[in-house]
Length: 305
Image 1 (spheres, rainbow, N blue to C red):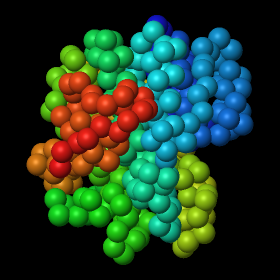
Image 2: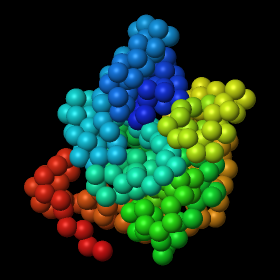
Image 3: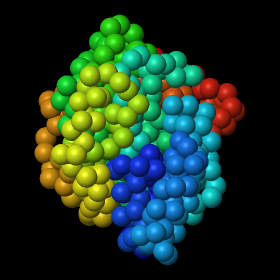
C-alpha cells in the first residue's frame, strides 16, 4: 500500500487500531481519526513501536457531532493530497437512549450518519484516486435489524420503545444499506465500496455499559477472537481489485449474502434520502449545494422531503 493515503475512523483501539497498524506496516500514509487525543497519541506510539518508519497523522473528532465531522473533512481535504482508502470503522453501543447535539439517536449517529456525511464530503478526493475505496465495518448483528420504510425516521430520532441492542443492530444494517446504495450510484472503477463483518471479537465496544449483555460480553472476552482478525480482514479487502469487492458484503474475507433486508434496494434508496436530509446534504448526493458553504459549515441547505 505504499503511496496510498488511508483514513481510519475509531483508530485508537480494536479493529480500527489493527487496521491502521496493518496499513502502516504496508507503507501507507495512515490518518487515525480518534475521539480522544490522549488515546490517539497512545495508538500512534504503539503503531510506531511495530513499524518505526510508519507515516501517521492524528486527527481528533467526536463523530456524534456533524459540525465536528465537517471540520474533520475540511482538514482532510486541505491537508492531504488524496484519499485512497476510507475505513468507516468507529462504532459505539449504548444500552440506554442518548440523543446527540443534532437531535439523533447516538448509536445511529456515530455508526452510520457520521460516516455517511464523512464519505460524501471526501468523495472528490476518493474519486480522484481512480478508484478510491470505502470499507464500511458492519456486523453480523445486522440480522437483528428492524429497519422498514415506515419506521426509518423514528429510528433516526430514537422515538418509540428503545432497546440498545436493537439500535446497534439497526446501525449495522444501515452500514450495509449505505454500501449497497453507494455501489449502485458509482461503478467499481469510479468508487469501490464494500461492507464487512469483522468477527465476534474482544474489543472495547462493551466497556461503557453495565447492562447484562455488556457484562456477559466482557466475561467472554478471553474466548473471543482477537481484534487483529478484523483488522487483517479490512486490510485484505482494501487491497483487492475493485471489481472483486464492489457492492458486496463479507464475513471477514468471505463474500456472503446479508439478510434480505440488507438487499432491499428500495429501502437502501429511501434510507439514503433520509440520511442525506439528516446531515444536511442534497438527497441526490451530488450537484451544487445551496446556501453559504454548506459542505463544511455555514447555512444548512434546504432538502426537499
